Image (tube, rainbow, N blue to C red):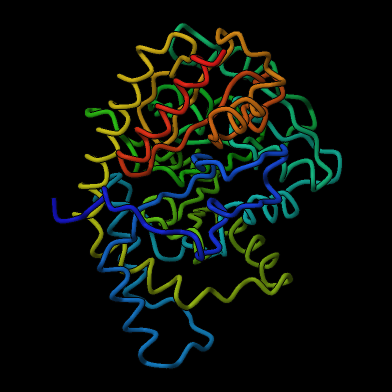
Length: 393
């Protein structure tokens, strides 16, 4: 393997949010730094090709205002075509400082105070936060829990829509459960949104992280021109190549009216000039990152397999089946630990920092999300600590 994903990096002086301790994101009182397997950052170094491109840009010594080059747009276009079979056009691409701030600006541009936004819990916490912080209401169409996974109930999905529902936040693939939506599922949801005049905001930031062989990411807007017309697709190299700190994402918007309106919002907020180093990293990642990604996916599949094999022998914790993401959805409801005490137990007894299930919906106390994009040795330590929790109980 040409890339060493087993390498353990010293994060002590990095100021990375994931490894920061004490941390404003830790809501529990603890005595020792926990092992952080929470926020969706990987512990792996970026591809050498990306680091070399960044070094070259810095060595030139000029870090001024920059626009995206034709070469960078071509790299984005080719990546979507080769990896996802979607032929996009340069004029569709809107560059932004990140997917999450894009969600807020989309809300501000296309909805009014008091409008409703549809989501599918358990789901990425920023879908809630962006909606509520901008004075909108959240309406939910929860995914239906089965023995080992979750499924869509299209009737419940449509029943959740109100006359004030203006946007549907689609997580594709779905975070935290790792579901890869089929073309049939996406078509069913898309047809419902067409009938009700709802714009689809498709968060496809995890599109490259498909772990189950034979499964493929289906961009929602690529299915049908009518779907593309009502959709804003949110992508970024950040999850795929561990570049979140460079604040660079790419939206694909085929509808010119929608695209121009959103661009005006970005201009009003003075967010229309991209991060120079983010552009450099984005182009290098999409142009040269294929081999690194292939090796990463092998490593993540093995980590996922290790996690499942370990938890198969720990009946107090259930790992839901998933097809994508470097994140696992854990069910502790049969652990004997009261849901309200789960985070405290994990932090103080196991010294493990997992994402609280409550982040993904108010009904998910007793659940947690684990990030397994780390070295195998760190994941092994995490599982040993988790086992000791139940030995002590």
